[in-house]
Length: 357
Image (tube, rainbow, N blue to C red; front, side, top):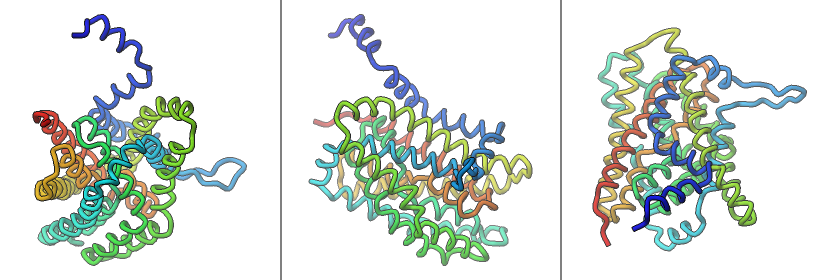
């Protein structure tokens, strides 16, 4: 048994960046809630960052949302262990099943929610809420799902592969899902979703999602081991802080308008719709993992991948394509918070299971 003094000295020798990363990861859920509270109580800086800014002496337009999204995805690609991917490609069933479920679950869940919304007194049949949810579930698997996989002792190589495959396929899968689900909308929201679909197809998914992730992968492959090691020590806390900053910026756009014009019914409806879609996605992913008879770690990773979509990317897409509709961010923000809550429950249940030899 290791003496307590040795354990203490070992923990003291850990680099400060690792201690900061561990501290942030242990408090990730509470940090997200604090970001939402800051957007509600102090939305001014977030609204300023959310607006486009022209750089002095240039014609370049800087948008903080896409920039932060690219930073997070670049860091995610940089942290991909290439050896883990090699192991995963030798058993591709997890990748094929995960990508198929990523396409099939929105096509199964969203029409059910659309039918329920038609019985509400909303004049457009809840098409606004449904538009936001369609944009969310059509996004690739969230890069932050790897953090929850580590916390729950899941299959990290499976989760990393699912994040990468869904991200690299997003220029095809995102417009495909938007086109298939657009007929469920009514009024002007069909045109709104078509505009978002064209933006995703014309380059948003490629420039803001695929390219940063691919650039991180390329850097992890070509950089010398010494440089890469130094870079990887500072990347995890930067990625976590960038993710929280992006949450604050996106939330400021929605919650800032709610302060000026409170709409409690809209907030309640956004929470209900997001909870229904989020719960069904996690439940279907868990059922599919049981049918496929994956081991506990792989099943946990597949379940997280089915329920955790990149809500930050959908929020950035809404802000870019529909700057005059900040209320559409409400269900996206609710979904982002709820999927973290569900992921926390899944990882706790996974950690409580006995380990099989």
